[in-house]
Image (cartoon, rainbow, N blue to C red; front, side, top):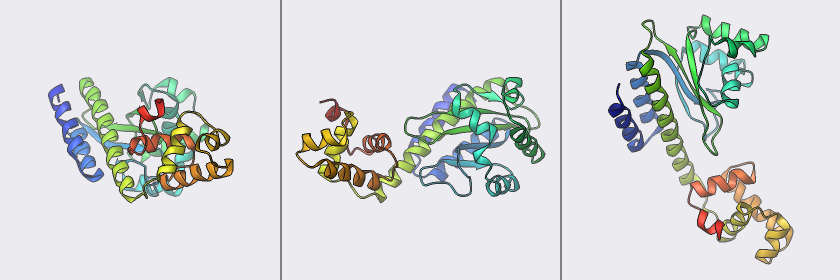
Length: 244
């Protein structure tokens, strides 16, 4: 797989209309590169993911069920390591294993028994996204080192394309923000607190607080920072308005 095919893959992801279409494209590419299993996904329970989670998986079904039943997402050493570093890492790397607790080493041993033994993980860090990574398990014939790099690129494009589709689907289901809610979020983006927003909008501090809370509820987020990021991503507020 050369750079031309990587860019072709990126273009196909950009044109995809569903996460399932992106998943099929990605799994086909990584299988062609020689990988036996892959999980390009948010760090969540794979069988009970939240609406904004990416879950493009091809793992042994029995392991996925066990992972979900035992709630291993909370202690998965791959998830926890990928969350705090940017560079890819191998599951057999001494530095990776040295920092793990006994229960985390047990998770790796159980995964190996399920067929997930020799692999590596690519951390995926995107602004406003759930923590995520792409884990790839080598096939019996191994993988060309150049194809490992190509898989890295494909994982990044597939994850971002899936997030784009999910955001678009969620935006269609959301109730649009009112003009006052958009105005309040613009002030939040400028770092204003409820008191300042109330003064600027000529409303009570409690009214300002409730306006921001309504906007957060419509956007389906838990924090004000998330509300600002999602409102910008959906085109509800714009950077140039915030800057002014």
